[in-house]
Structure formats: structure tokens, C-alpha cells
Amino acid sequence: MRKIEGTVVAGGGAVGLMTALRIAQQGVPVTIFESAPTLVEEYRASTFHPPTIEMLSEVGIADKLGKKALIADKFQLRDKEKGIVAEFDMDALKKDTKFPYRLQIEQYALVLLLFDSLKSFPNCQILFNHEVISANPKEDEVEIKFRNPEGEDTVICDYLVGADGARSAVRTSVNIPFDGMTYPERYLVTFTTFEFREIMPDLAYVNYVSDPEEWFVLLRSPGLWRVLFPTKPEETIFDTDPDPAVLDEIAQKRYQKIHQTEVPYPITWRNIYRVHQRVAASYRSGRVFIAGDAAHVNNPLGGMGLNGGLQDAFYLGNALALSWKNALNEPLLEHYAEERRKIALNFIRAQTAQNEENIRQKDPVIREEKQGEMRAMAKDNSLARDYLLRTSMIQGIRSMAPLPQIY
Ligand SMILES: Cc1cc2nc3c(=O)[nH]c(=O)nc-3n(C[C@H](O)[C@H](O)[C@H](O)COP(=O)(O)OP(=O)(O)OC[C@H]3O[C@@H](n4cnc5c(N)ncnc54)[C@H](O)[C@@H]3O)c2cc1C
Image: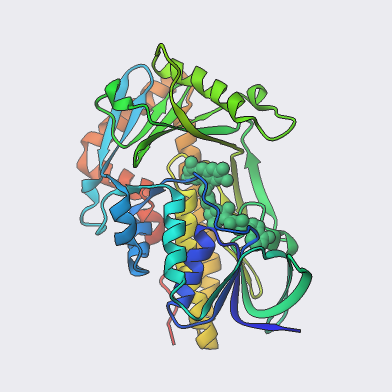
């Protein structure tokens, strides 16, 4: 059977490419199998948190991304009726990180930069139209079944990474459960050239707007406002793929409730998706590892899904490269699987679930109480810093056990 030296990464999304870059930069062979014919250039996530920017800086991408992105050094919690409840200034984190801000830029901008960087590594191959069907981990290698335009085939490699998204074929084929829940409503994310600062001049680039019935998130990325909100389950029962015109109609109604206009809002793009809170029961099965959405999915409130995935990739890529060079480094792989899973459970899942509960809180007493807490927190330097350490994902990284000794 044909052998591919080193690691095979299933999935050429942001997480797969970042894993491959970490491996390639250490001179270790890596091959990406991507099922699509080209890179997927969709509007998806758009926020990069400080620890992710630090990691992107280490792989030489942060400056390039920073030049294209907006710097969001403040974010707001707002009430749909009352306006600003609390504004958090990320400058409070200046002793905690070199990057006390979020970068606001579409996910595909990073995908393109990662892909460009990988092209300069002769030890990295990217194979499009290659869909991984299943994985079979053996003691010293992994057998992979895949499909390409010539048909089905099998290869072996040293390690396999499933960075193949939430429906991961890799995770499924090694029987790792993906327990959790799915929210009843689907989220509609829309993009508009309408300038929301004309009607809300005090907006930050990142705004979470709470309301018992009609909450939404307003995020700025270069040239566009992104408006994200949940739809009612009965609004989005589609027999086939949703018609963009139907989604725009739902969006126009919601936009009008934010601010009434005589003419329809210019909506330039829209996407609807199901939202889950799930964490894989394990991040490894022998020589097979999972990362990114294949390992954990969560609601987008707080922008932690892609960030968590990129952070997985940073640790996993390093662990795979070093273990390939020297088997004494294999404890790094266990460190990855244990520590990153704990973060998905204890920080990402916990924080995003809390964000969702706060933004849609229906009980007026709890709502008032929470808003009071947030107001007080924003005014108290020490409490604000604690909150920012959690919401910017720094606390999660700091909670990780130290890396095992490296040989
Ligand atoms: C429609 C949509 C909108 C989103 N919006 C937001 C948002 O607003 N905010 C937010 O924080 N997060 C959002 N997310 C989540 C965020 O985009 C993900 O967390 C992020 O994309 C995870 O990256 P990934 O590389 O793990 O997976 P993906 O980006 O899903 O990449 C997986 C890659 O693997 C490939 N692949 C799949 N199966 C196989 C296979 N069997 N073999 C080989 N290749 C395979 C796919 O083609 C893809 O290129 C959204 C996700 C979706 C789907």
C-alpha cells in the first residue's frame, strides 16, 4: 500500500491549514486532503482574539492579517431599547498580552493567507478533490480510505488529523461520540453596507444587543456591518436549500425592528446555519486526532469557535511535528488531547452558553440584575480585567497544564 510520509490533515479549512503550517514550519512532511475543488471562501467567523493573534504572530501571519483587519479595542453589551449597558476597554489587558484587542476580518482572509504561506514549503502538499472517507488507526501508522476523481483508494501515513468540520468523517469513522445539544432556532447571519453608526453613533466594532424577543449581534468587518440573529423555528423550515430571497425577507423584517427605514436595507450576503453546543468525547483515537469544529462546536456568541480551533491547531501541529522527529515527544500529543478538550468544556462551552443566556434573558428581574452586574464590572478595573481575561480566551490558555519536556 502507498505510504504518505508524516501527517495527513483531512480538511483544508482554517484549522487544517494552520495545523499543516505548524508542522511544515518544523521541516516535517504534511499532506492536506481537501474534499472541495478549491479553498472554501465563505463568510463565516470574523473575530480573532488576543491569544489567537499571538499564535498567528508566531507562525508569521498576524502582521499580514492585521493590515487587512479592523482593530476592535472595545466591545459593548447593549440593550435593544436602552442602548449601551456596559463598554469594555481591552486596554485593561495590556499587561496580559501584546495584542490587547480583537481583529475583525472575515475568516476566509486568514484561509487565503495560510494557504499562501504553505505554498512555499516543499514538505507540504495540498490535494484538492480528495475526500477522506474513513480512518483506521494501527499501532505504528494510520490507514486512510479516500475518494478523488479517479475513484476510491487507500493510503497509510504516520498520523491523521481530522480538521474536516462539524460533520467530521474522521471522528465518525473512529467512533468518537459528539454529544451535546442543538438549539431549536437557526441563526441567520447577514451583511449590509448600511452604516449603522448613522443611527447609533456610539457603536463599537463589536456589539452584543440583548432583548427578550429580538436580540442580535452587530459586528463590523472591513466595509460591512454583519448582523447576526436567531430565526424562529417555524420561519426556516425549508424543503430544499433556503432561497436567498426568503432569507432576505426574514432579515428585512428584523432590520426594520432595529431601525425603521423607508427603503429596504442593502443586504449583500446572507447565510443560515444550525447552532450546537457539542464537545467530542475524546480528541484522539491512537494516531488519529481531531481539531476545530470536528472536535467542538458552540454558539457564535463571543466568537470562540474558530478561535478555539486555531488554538487547537497551534498545539496539535507542534506536538505532531515534534513527535514525528522523536518518539520521546509523544506525551505532547496526550497533552494536546487532554488540555484542549478541557478548554472546550470548561471555558468555551461555559462562556458561550452564558453569553447566550444573558443576551436573550426573558425574566425582567434577572435581566435588570445582570445588566447592573455588567455595568458595575465595566467600571471596576480589576473586575473588568477578570471579565476580559475570560471573554478574550486568555484565561483558558493560562489554565492549560505546562507542556511536557521537549526532546
Ligand atoms: C455557515 C457558517 C457560518 C458561521 N458563522 C460563524 C460566525 O458568525 N461566528 C463564529 O464565531 N463562527 C461561525 N461559524 C463557525 C466557524 O466558521 C467554524 O468554527 C470554523 O469554520 C471551524 O474551522 P474548521 O477548519 O474546523 O472547519 P471548516 O471551516 O468547516 O473546514 C473544514 C474543511 O474540511 C473540508 N472537509 C469536510 N469533510 C472532508 C472530508 N471528509 N475530507 C476532506 N476534507 C473535508 C471542508 O471542505 C472544509 O474545507 C460558522 C460556520 C458555518 C458553517
